[in-house]
Length: 316
Ligand code: FO1
Image 1: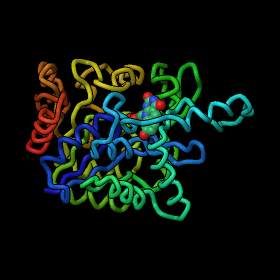
Image 2: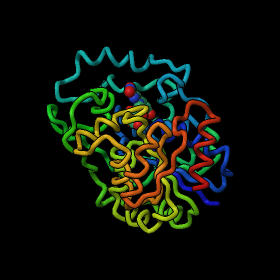
Image 3: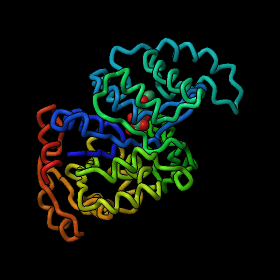
């Protein structure tokens, strides 16, 4: 059974860690958001790809949910010396984005391989192999797509400035996915979507993690054609996002913070929506949108519950 998971962020990484125990690695493909990616210190950084790689390799820092455990930050601290002399219009020696010494190795390797002409798909496969990720890990595109956040009070900023520098604690007016209309969906991704027996939308942020994927016209079209084989896992539990700004963004972008809103957003590309038992009373509202509600435990508190959620997502 060929399974494809649409991923972004920490929730997707956790979900994959459970799913990989119930789907043979040769049948599993993760299609990952690259809208969070950024260039910093002359390096290309891919947070969602790296978070999945490190989580699946059991090397993730469990407290942060991103970056490597037992990390050191000497290079970042050494950069602070230059902040004092940096010209006002320079972004050199940026230290608000936490890059650990071991994590830097990934960005050094990726960046050098990209300058040698390798595609992001090729380099991602090399990094996944180096970390012994057993399934296929695909960036959604080999072309750059960047999520830009139009905020109420701080202008339009990069996703990481919103998420990290401002701790996603500022009001958002709209989201833009720069490059999405001209970027090509990678052929590997289109092939995986077309041949999938089951497509799962991981419990990721529907706007900033899944949104960039859907901003690629060819990918949205391919997903719409596979709607009947696609199930989405809601990132909301009891009106709250377990991690990240999904609940805030729903409200700031004009939606009610309900499972019905998640169903409305995913309806064009998914036929079922998995919601937590705490939200069972919202099942009829989901059914009214034309999606089938599946009520189960969606809180991935440990590997056992995550595997059970994965089983449910496969069997609906
Ligand atoms: N998240 C933070 O909240 N603070 C950071 O300093 C930070 C650094 C960082 C470095 C590498 C990486 O792969 C992820 C990092 N993240 C950090 C998480 C990242 O912003 C988010 O995981 C995604 O972009 C959104 O899911």
